[in-house]
Length: 218
Image 1 (tube, rainbow, N blue to C red):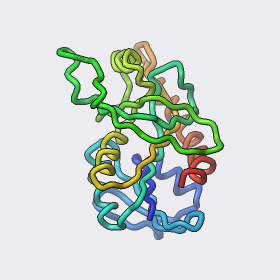
Image 2 (tube, rainbow, N blue to C red):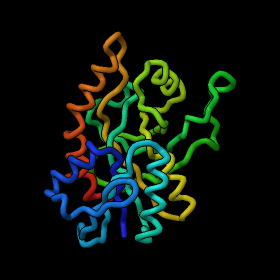
Image 3 (cartoon, rainbow, N blue to C red):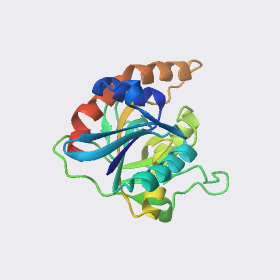
């Protein structure tokens, strides 16, 4: 069976609407809901993990144990930290860095062993690639954007590094595919503006991921 992780309630809601999945078809588990189905002749479980790394890692281990998953696809949104990525770009990282534990006041360099490398899928649809970071807080400050940009980290989310570590420990294949919804904006009202941009792009990005890309990478 293949697992498709969608982290947030807002992202999962879009998936349910696109596939017209009613609440009565959902099953509950400690971290949210999941839905089992046949997708292109494959057994698939779509599950909502909840945001941040503890929820993502714990829910992933739960699903691996329950369904003996052979592959997990992390599907959702990310924030850009580089002019290389524009809103609504599809980003499939070649490596992911958990940058929360780096004590920047002492040494802010990204070492090679901090990076979790990924194999890129062979698909016909266009995408951009590079390094992505994971943190337990959303990328909303200009300071964090500047730091990531200085390390050639093009985007950030709150789940992928944790999911990858759990998959690696369980010898489960993992693919991360993200759509860019927002980036930090300078100014007094920067966060509010960023949130508005995120809300505008959320359903557009999820629709592209679900209707186009998921079919190729499943």
